[in-house]
Image (tube, rainbow, N blue to C red; front, side):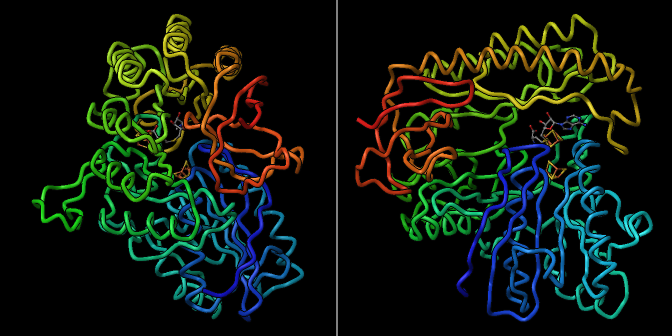
Length: 478
Ligand code: SAH
Ligand code: SF4
Ligand code: F3S
């Protein structure tokens, strides 16, 4: 692989509307591409696949879009606001294209899939539209576009997992990496556009996942996050070649976790996202058994009202969800739990909203991603229900949800004062190069003085917490 200088422009959060650009420089190629990613971690991971495909077809990367021959936006459709952000960015690129006509502009990802060739009618400056399962055809589409044609491929696949493509780690701290284990989603949550933009669920073969994680560990990475829209339904009939001569049983998510955890005790494993209906005891027990599987579960509840959950087609009840939380606490008392919550879904009453607040208290989330409902064209909810909660009420309820979560997060952090955590050092803290920043197993950010000790990025240290803010634990190496 050529020597790539990788640089980070701004941070992405873990899910939903997060915006960041992945940029890297390569001096060796004549043609240059620039790629910017929006949306969930899966999209960020896909951009790393795209970078690999482009590099193999002779494109080098640049961090400066003004010198790029090809500008790519990997887009998200999850909420209307996410799409608006992309359109705004496209108008900025329009100005650039007026001065530099040869520049090609490509739209990738979920918005490309949702709008298909309509994108080319709506946004005249776009030359290439490629859906999430068609990235292998990107080099051919670029050639088409170079000859002045508009190029589109939004075919979804039942098989594509890009298992054989070695991602180029963009925006990397060299310590933590994302690894896609599956694509698509077979759930039909009524509010959600993902099944339409990402297609049918399929699992990547287990051997290629274990190999990618092993390679990462050998390159010095110390944490992998296994990614899928619904990791608990991971299922591969390609049994793992453990060399133990054991039977050819299919690989479940629990088994995959155990195998990745066995690569090396120094490699930490995280995963996202779990679905309350699918997370099994076997997964919880596997987590408890392996010290290096991080004690943190992202278990989106969406709503605390059984009636709303039914309308959302989440297929569990409030009681089912509560039982899952109790089971997690029983098996792993120290497990961090986080959630996604939507306010103002169709027909939501004040009582439904209060049920959500009460369930948040019950679950005692350490952290949540919170949104107000945004109707997406083509979804079950858009076809069947009226988006009848006024925006002010959606926002008022969201505000209450956010306030409650802030309190729960603060309380959760306060409970950690006096405790000692094993922290994986990810790099300098944002505020000072005299401090390290890392995460606890529970996924909390921990900041602590370097103290002239000879630790480096990628090392584990024991940190005693003596202070906290709403979002960070502050401690001292012991
Ligand atoms: N696969 C994951 C999450 C996918 S999208 C899961 O099943 O949990 C991330 C989050 O965005 C969702 O959990 C949901 O809370 C939120 N979301 C999805 N569609 C939305 C919509 N139409 N309006 C508001 N929030 C939405
Ligand atoms: Fe969307 Fe539901 Fe699938 Fe998550 S599980 S991606 S919310 S349809
Ligand atoms: Fe957005 Fe697509 Fe992810 S809609 S949240 S980028 S799967």
